[in-house]
Length: 213
Image (cartoon, rainbow, N blue to C red):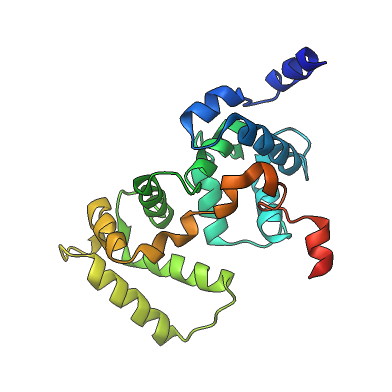
């Protein structure tokens, strides 16, 4: 049975062996196995092809495949390393590895920088920062006045752009985050440390939890 199961997995698009992924990420082999179960659930939620499409990603995050969100779009784009419009299992595990509590802080800072660098120019510009601030406020259901948003963006940009050239490079970003570590707080998901116990509470909440809300 195990041999048949292994062959079936190898036929899955983008499947990679747990031993390989565990060696390259903070996850153990058993945690990668648990993530594979989660991946199968997500990747077959709308289109049963063993790949996570953007609609499935939106559904997993928001319970609504039609709810567009810049933050979710950027996370999807960064998970989709091959840029082929879908997330494969290997991409899923490696990208999630950045969010593991034991992942290097430098990796978290770099991922967050890419998140804000919307046009992928290697810099964060003021309008990109504003777009992400608005997206994060929207996701948190916080409503601020235009003046309040502008104040937040100006204060952040003026402090981070130490060279005063109208853009934030990766070194300036590192320095800024070192002074404000809360900026990458959402880059750590504590329950990834116990994924074998927490599954399926990551992204997809269990039916029991939902009935209690």
